[in-house]
Image 1 (cartoon, rainbow, N blue to C red):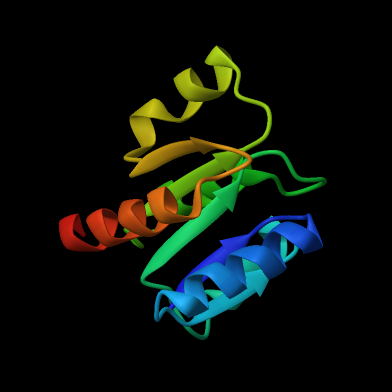
Image 2: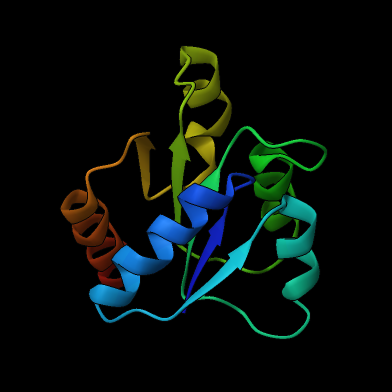
Length: 118
């Protein structure tokens, strides 16, 4: 299962369609907090994570994952690529850093590679 964590509903829906057509099951989360809360039940195989969300953003999710013993492939997606953002997450073992709008085939290829390396 691929977790999609993004505050933009159209992005979540589009990624669900794309990943479903590639044979992946998805779980959609409109906030970092909802995703973190879900980890008590089911753990995803990979996370697609938006960095810039209200309240609990992608940076906070990464910090919480780093504090836990949970090691999962994380693919960052963002519409606001800034050098500071890359510097802030580079040491966190991120599988990929993709800029929106995302090329669908590139994302699927990136997920496949992240899962192979996990």
